[in-house]
Image (cartoon, rainbow, N blue to C red):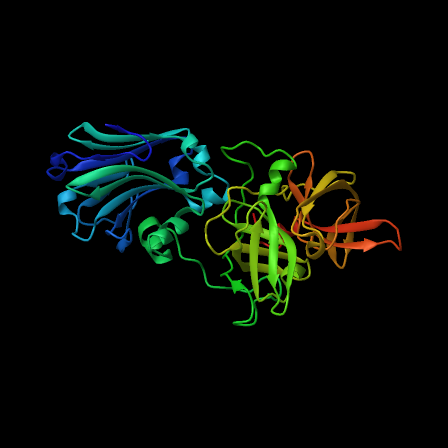
Length: 417
């Protein structure tokens, strides 16, 4: 029986009497970029003792045996522990592939099937048209009800496996045991003092990654955004709680995993940080990964692990910004007076210079306070070359000069690769 999205169907009584093969075939990204897992859940949709079985792993449980070639599982439903009420087939990108921008959009076609004795009991076909930028998919669920039933669940999670597992009451240790995903490393200092350095008196401090974080270099499986209109979905206001007052700056997503960049001076002295994406009213809490005070850069992360369907690509670290390059700016100037309205400006790079011991791009594009942290991108391809940091007025009525930190500094600091 071929299931449609959301459809449920009973399994024949014979499903309890003999092994069933659960398989998933994909056309699109290589299997080295993907993980196929089976979650064992109770009647409350929570993991049973953290049981996550990976098709290519060695972990098994009563009634579930992984099969690596082709990837899938052998099920004996009659042998499942009584606490296991549901089995959920999950397809997810690896964390490395997710950082490169690989998502469900890269799947040309796929099919999940239950086969017994060489005959298909149920099948569910899917493709990128069924999803978007999700990095983890719930495909097929088997559950107890007057026997066993199958459900083409077809849900996606932007935040990948961590977000999905958290939904079912799991955590990093469950992923480590079941999906080969290591728990986060211990914190280490990086790039100068952090605004979260005072315990209990600052934004949440995330454990700093053990090495440079990989970034997507292309929009894999999706259409390149139009410049500047489609870039706005990756921008947002950084709301800074200073205790007795609030301040704002601009931040922007650099990948699907919820990483964003702003200026160090934007987050300085913060008691808490939140991100409100363009067109959204949801305030998402931010944690601090790295702060570079000298370079006026900060790398932040959304704590909800939901990721972002939209982001901006950075220019290659091998590319040197050029004098005369046409650039655009996006930011939220004068938020206190004008409200949180996104503003677009454009101009050229009219000087490459050192200022306060850091490489900066001098721009003739207009900006104002509140735009700090905003991306400076090439208008020809939308790739970010700088992070707006400060301005300089040349006397009353004179020219307003703005400066941006060369984005290559993020690579030089070892934050990104």
